[in-house]
Length: 518
Image 1 (cartoon, rainbow, N blue to C red):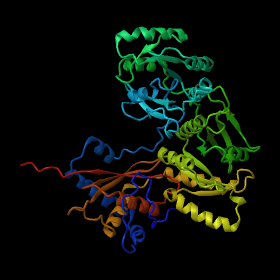
Image 2: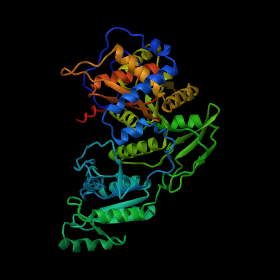
Image 3: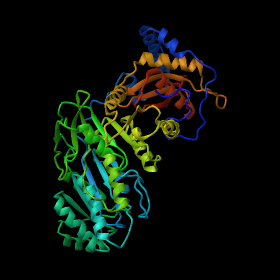
Image 4: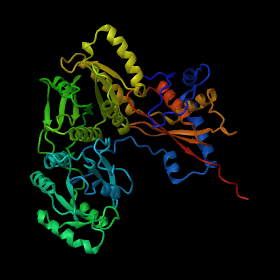
């Protein structure tokens, strides 16, 4: 459980805002325990009735009527279809990604050394959702360029249902384009050929030259101006399946799904092998993959667990940028299919920037979270004492995640993983009754009211939990709550109700009183 006195901000992206520091101690837990469920429900009903005098929209009404998303409707084995965009540098892939998304999301400059954490995006066209995987922004190096471009494209194609090959129609077909086409033919994935930079009818003659790639009709588009993109997306929708065949698995009864993630060489494979041992039950071959199985059923603590995307693509990626891209893509995909993430960190090395990025991906994914510290058995007592202090400092923003100290090599303490997984998943699923939540908010605000800002003091009118998996709370307020005060509420929610091992979200809906009719 996180320390209620900690000043570490909850990871809502608002670092730098002053913290709300309560004065004195309080007896909120004791007061809350003294309130019966009946009294709490009666109080909440009164607060809810009071909301009728405020301006509410249809979404508010749905939320207040008791609609609740328990996450059960989400089926990780019926995921949105995946479209990979491939092509050599400077053909306009990232510009096309931004055009499809309708927002500036992808990095457009192909600058060596540019690091992009997110390589896949949620997209929609004509009411259909799909996932877009961008392979743009690669380092340009004349040596072995054809090989490297093909390797990077292969990683994305491996995990896609269809491929959008972007070629610069003005430049024409290059050796790099031909190298990618050879790889695409081996993949046997549907390919949509796009000739980019066709800004007008005059240039469409250049586009016709792309028939020479042997991939069928090239679709002319201008990523910069949007010309032809709608027709291209119609064609994409005709090509993509309803659900992803790559991520697709038949649901097999419901073992909890675990993603073991971490930077390369941190010990994921060793730990997985140690966990599986001779007790491995079955390995599922995922439809649409041509390489190793990616999900493994493992017996732990007398139960079966599904470890998703654990084996992965056992291949050599010669280029560092390609390896980073692959690791990020694999991490995001594993998190999408999982319910809980185990982030493996090595204690014999300092916390790296890549560790921090992977942790952030796990938090943003909304999955339950367990931190596993590998090689802990190699530390002497003195080093462990200092290490505890370093972890508390460096990982203060995830102090709510259960910690397990293990050895991937020997299996030391591997039995402690199951209680941590159970705890995180239990809290990820947790729902707080509306009456109990509002009783908590009432006692909290009475003891620690929001500071007065500009002569006004925002009040919390009503609170409700909108969903679980992860728990999300909505507060109806009369004014904007400071970021520091929201983090204070979040910390006290954790202190009072637990929530160890799960991210929680507290959002506001500022509402004004209805104007009185004359």
